[in-house]
Length: 497
Image 1 (tube, rainbow, N blue to C red):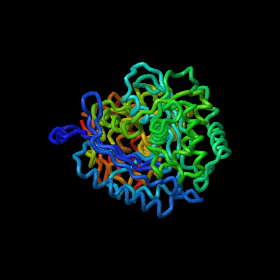
Image 2 (cartoon, one colour):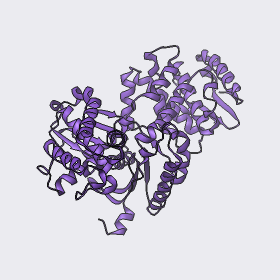
Image 3 (cartoon, rainbow, N blue to C red):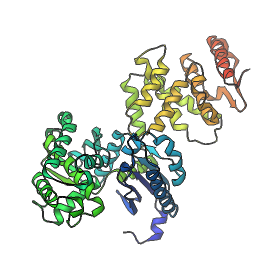
């Protein structure tokens, strides 16, 4: 615990908010040399996964419970001078049918944007958090995280992530399906374990014991199971499979979650732990894991490290975009020209904020990835790939933004008419379309050769000799004028000497 408040106020502080299926949690921390020190932590066990009805929607009661928690978190966050806050929502918000309609109210209650992240991104963040606490630089490791709605398996070597897979099996559904009303018996436990094994059996090849040296457990459920074993002297006191068998026997003997009397196991977590234990045992059986080391780090710590990396210009999204472009064999030089020119043109348009600058630049880098599918409709294919790809560090909203930009780079603008209602987004679309046009026309053009403005109308001033030396530009400019006219925005081309 830090007691020097002056030191805290001078340190760069970040906050991570995790909207999980079992609990909503937050961490506030600061970078302290080679580590991130958590100075404030909160948890609210709202059991969001239990609030999904038979139609797959969050109930009014569940949504209100979530809003109450988020309002409380907002007040906590307001007491700190934070550089950045990142809010991530996991499986329950991924699968709830009414998540999109609930999101605006949730963001209003918290006062911050909420990212619904993919299972793969969740796994990557979990690994970042775990790796930050472990010493083995080159150690090959398996990280296991069993949450309320999903389970993530991650392979890595030291700080590097090699492979991630997310499974839609979590403690809540496993508990409800096999231990209804809290009843526990040997047959239901064995069925729950077998069910878990069936979900992991196809994952054996990538996660076989030959691929890693040590296995770590990062979730609160795994830590709670470990605490119960250690504090009650069960088995050998470690998270070995015999110890899990011994814990299972104790739970079966109790017969009901309300009668579980184990030190370290809170009554409100008993049902979660029963379902989690069945998943953990099934996973260890199927993957051949004999012992797991619990780690007190995971998703929230990973989010804090991700924010620290972004603040120090080591944004892993940059690497993800470059890898993605290379995977689809888009020309690096052409991509860079479009990305840089689009960014320069956008700045000349003087947007209200810089919120879209990075996404515009990355969209420029990815603008030709769809050519691997088709040269004629490459913008459509590129948009689809960008939206649905597994891109490290990105959330669905960010990928949708880039997808829309990639789609809008050419052709009619009716397909993105709703997005153009945002003046800054309209400017980003204009900047990207012109950058693509100039690059494809092979214009060696500099930003100083162009004057571009966009208010109620678009005014583009370009050197006369460029139009003479590249006659097709006049043709494409006329097409561009027609596209913008369809949206109700006048496009004027002026020539300068």
